[in-house]
Structure formats: structure tokens, C-alpha cells
Image (cartoon, rainbow, N blue to C red; front, side, top):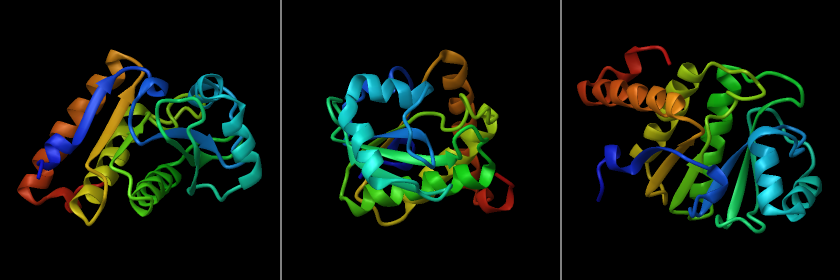
Length: 185
């Protein structure tokens, strides 16, 4: 079995090119694939993904929903609704939608998942806080019973990648010293 450090992979790249079981869309709760990550997923994955989203309809903020991956390499897309359309992401909605995305992947028996930095684009959520929340949720999920073997964080540029790497190094130190619960995310 791989260590926790080996099961969380941080990389710079194009989320829509990931060949994992599922990629995560930074979604609004109406599941309208507009700009940013969602727009790229719609362009590369095709209209079938938006049609499936339309069938699902509106979901609560902080939840997630799954559709097929359309023409993407990934078999599925999980739409993590961290905000309302035109709204902002909060720490709580990011934490909740990340955890819900991981649970959906586990419930489907999926082995690999790729996340973007949810909420840091159009929604304007701070990148460093995003990294802390998402990495902590991923680590906590992987420490429990799950089908997931690998959680990828696929970041748009080197700056985001460096922030996630630095945050992950700090979190690993906290987890190994047993102080992870004592610090605020």
C-alpha cells in the first residue's frame, strides 16, 4: 500500500487532459457549465455533459453531482458546487463540496480523481486557503476506508502548484506530529 504522501499528487497541467477515473469541475449549484474550468470541460467533453447536468438540475451549494465524462479521457465528471451562479465560494462550501466529491468517487468504487483549485477562479477564493482545505479533506478521506488510490491536484500554473506543494508539506508535518486537528484549516 502506498503512503499518504504518495497517494496525493500535485501537478501543473490541464485538468481536461487527465486520464483518471473522474475529474472534478468547479461548479455552481445550477450546474451550468459557463467559464473557467467548467467551460473547458464543456468544450472538450462535449454537450452531453451539460445535458446530463440539466437533467440533474439544481443541487444545494456544498454538494456535488456526477455525470459521464463525455469525450474526455476521464470516465466521469463530479461537479463540486462550491458557489451559486455569480456568487462566491466560502470555506465551508469548499470543504463540504470537496468531501462530497470524494464520497461520490468512493461510492462508485473509483480509484483515481483529479481536482482543480476549486473556487479560486471566477469565485475568487484565496488560493492558499483553498489548498489547506482541499488537501486536508483529501488526506482525511484517504486515511479512512476508500476505493480511491490516488488524488491528483491539477493546477493551472506554477504559482498555484508551488502554493499547493508548500501547503501539502506543512500538512504532512502536522499529520505526522499529530497536531493536524489542533490547527485551524
